[in-house]
Amino acid sequence: MFPVLALCWLAVFFDGMDVNIYGAVMPHMLDDTGLGLTPDSAGTIGSWTTFGMLIGALTAGNLTDWLGRRLMLVASVSLFSAGSALCAVAGDIGLFGAGRFVSGLGLGGLMPLCLAMVMEFAPPRRAALTTGLLMTSYHFGGMAATGLGLTLAPAAGWRWVFWAGVLPALVAVPLLLRLLPESPGVLLARGERDKADAVADRFGLPRPTEVAAPAAGAAGRLAAVRELFRPESRWATPLLWLASFCGLLLVYGISTWLPQMMRASGYGLNSSVSFLMVINAGGIVGLLIAGRGADRFGAVRVSAIWFLLTAAGALLLKAHLPLGVTYLVVAVTGVWLFSAQVMVYAATNTVYRDSERAAGLGWVTGVGRTGAVVGPWLIGELAASGNESWGFTTFALAGLGGALAICLVPAARRFGRGGTTAPAPVTADARS
Image (tube, rainbow, N blue to C red; front, side, top):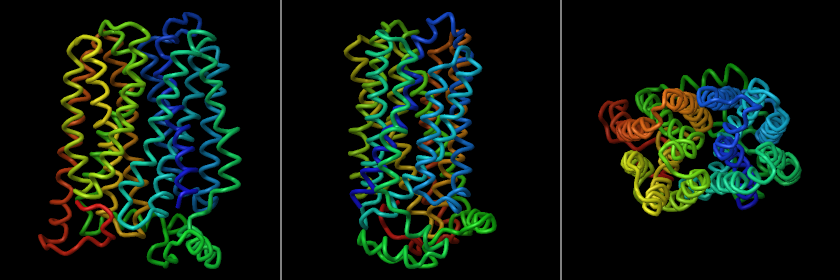
């Protein structure tokens, strides 16, 4: 599965770079009086991005029936590259916000597609670890964005950082078109049995069956959503949605606002932007730890502990600590923060059957995007009123909410089965 993981890793790397670019250059943009950006409008624009992600995530599944996952990935990368170019030429916040919305449309579709591809091609009993490896790329991308914010923005201006965001269309798109295979399950759902079997044989996968194939067409999609609320998962599904909401509120709230929040707390401009790089570096370490831990102890258990530790880290950041200690707290918080959300995705593997996996994952990410919309907007409102420090309390509460929701998933599954201890109707890639 290495080619699939490598290509999806590259696509998610550029996803992470695009998401974090805005936070990395926001302090410079707020200092640019010609653009007219204010803390209030900055939070609103951050929510435009994530609102575009919400639409993109919920739309991608239906378009996949028509275009396939490979071409949808190409379309997603092309969209957020085009949005970055629009931001680079924007002369006012209206056009800039439109560019971030276009970027969001592409970003929203990309993540669930890459996750579904990697889970499908992953070796048996390594779904959580493979998911963690994939998501390290998001944080490498975030670190790249921070590096651009620290070097390119002061030297050449913030617009050149967004011009760098056009690189995905030039680098990733040709590679995806040439090298990425189509999903065997999608090929089978479209009636292309021979192609589906050929791809499965090439990558050493079991040949897909009708049970494993995702439902096609609008009627099939509605049926797939109904299946998410069958007795065994009807209570677990909304809990996964709530956990994803809390996780993505944390991820996008912090990715958008951490530098400005730290600057408002009294840290210097360069240090404040550097915190974004440090927290993404911690995220890489955390995903490697969480992936192995989830394969051994279960994605649900790891996600719950990680959410609780994130809440503790957010409360520590509320205090103005010495710079060296603050760097350490930010790094350790990054270890827990991002992988808590990724393990929510991995936990879907314990709840949904093979035929429901794509729909279940798509709705967990899609509904969770409402948290990504709320996070940047809410912190923007707090910043506009001079209460940035309350943002850390908001993040701590989101961590507690995510921990509670994901903790209840195993009990919800047992309750849905009438209290029986029958095994889950999926392969045990990650125990709950």
